[in-house]
Image 1 (cartoon, helix red, strand yellow):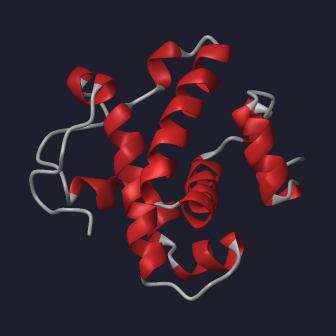
Image 2 (cartoon, helix red, strand yellow):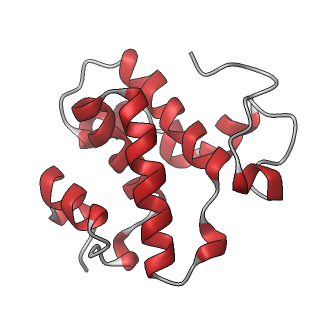
Image 3 (spheres, helix red, strand yellow):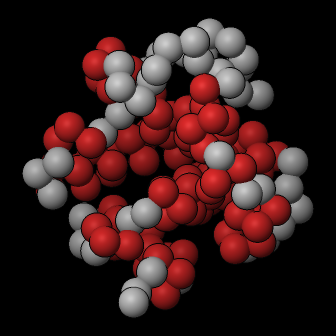
Length: 137
């Protein structure tokens, strides 16, 4: 079975940006990898801009308009950035092994920052809501 790890960082980034990535391999871990690639390549602000634009296009290309969530997307990128700042790893595989919470306990991680359920809030889906409980720094 193919996974996102079968693709180089550049192949993964290019296929996602062109909406050619097989959606079956775009798992939660692949979302985290996309953020990791962009942050390391473009910095945090450009990563947020790139990924939001590309993820909207990707979900639209699949006819999955309701799957995009602005708050979860930006909060996830900020969370990955937070862990990158504390990491000395140079590969995504090492990074995700060093920070398993991003993969295994992600919803709980975001719930520590938000008082509302950002995963189901219509407002959170359409626009970014700043965290009320803890900032992403």
